[in-house]
Length: 162
Image 1 (cartoon, rainbow, N blue to C red):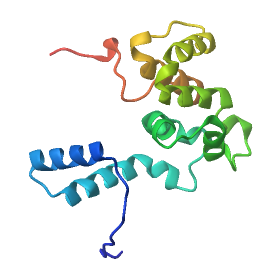
Image 2 (image 1 turned 180 degrees about the horizontal axis):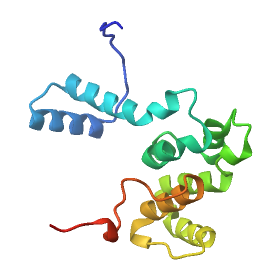
Image 3 (image 1 turned 120 degrees about the vertical axis):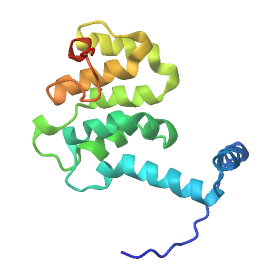
């Protein structure tokens, strides 16, 4: 593996440049070091999308981690998300329903939270925490596709006080 570095040109808004410079100054690092950190951090979050064997329901954790950002910042709609997730998945049981991908897309659209809450409540058949729509969607998708709650979520009954 080569450590050769290349220059890349990226267009950024003036406000983003000010943020980068401010954070770099506060951390005491060069702007370029912060850029590399941001890129490496984003790439690690998106790694499941790079791996060829990852598709369908295998991408649920990655969708929950990055789907909101992908749809919001890269303008990925449900149709495109469906192709990204389900193309090449022949077993229908391993595919993510298009309606559920709609939920991920709606989560990235800040103006759609009331509608998302309504549709998610309708699909779950139970209450949705309106102040935690992300968590409610995560619980719904994990229980539907992966057979349980996300590993990162702790239930009160699981906590032991010493």
